[in-house]
Length: 409
Image 1 (cartoon, helix red, strand yellow):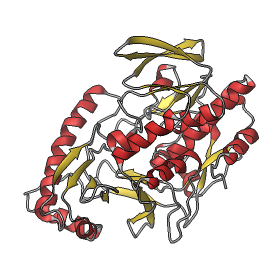
Image 2 (cartoon, rainbow, N blue to C red):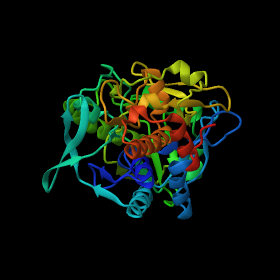
Image 3 (cartoon, rainbow, N blue to C red):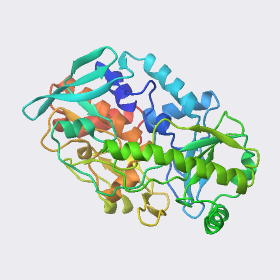
Image 4 (cartoon, helix red, strand yellow):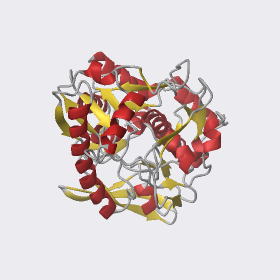
């Protein structure tokens, strides 16, 4: 979304290809309970996401579909933004409709068009058959780096990446009472349920988040599906089925054991299982966990990130947190968006060039929106200058982003 909007606002002719019937990625098809990474962590929260990412929040706020800051995990000082996932679909529709973007829903990119090491276009398949879309610059915002991989870009993927999660919602919840037992108290209830052998829960780490504009509705993120890789269709198939089975177990536990859920019922299992980690495209720079935790600055920083390194451990089913120093953020280098040895291509979102540890920080909503805006802006500037994205003037890119509300300092 942010890549497409940024590119068109900077003068490019844009096609946006989306495989579902609605836009929003994980925020609408997985539902990430709360939009993460908009604020620094610790005792003082500073908003570090501006630009189009914050514009989306403002549009949601106008219709009462967002809570701008909701603190969770008091021991980590982390803030998230609960949002209404259904209204987000409509907000994004309106934002795209206001621009001259050629939107193709229900369309899947099935191949790339190459000339030597340069990508020239993509092959799209949908109900109308196959179409070829040619472009000066392609932005891969698939999360999994699907286009980059098809183009021959180098990448890394773990044999055992972080577990997947099937998020669900429950309705008719006494939300205030439900939220009063988050943290250690809820974890102890789950451990007691597991010890009783009545509830075969897979994880006791997760979250419950209210949905603005839906009284009595919360989204729940606790399920864990291990030993599955999001680039393998058989693994994804198993993850979807196992995820829905786990949802029934957790919904039963909550309705029987957790205050506020006495009269609640399972309202929705969302469109797709949530995938935290797959391909990490190898770019001109590989962002590291050390870069994140040291709040490192880069000359080619195109946005800020402050989300902790959040690793969902495969062995223990625990969430392992490593937080940046109180109130600080790090830069995301533009070079992480540029795949090595492939021209005409930028990557945005979860698949940027990063290590396993760095990905555990940059994969959340705020940084992904920031990266998307940078990619779209860079693509438009490269087209204007008739140069490849890897050769654009970083000062020009940064000044353009600043002028459009992106926070860089």
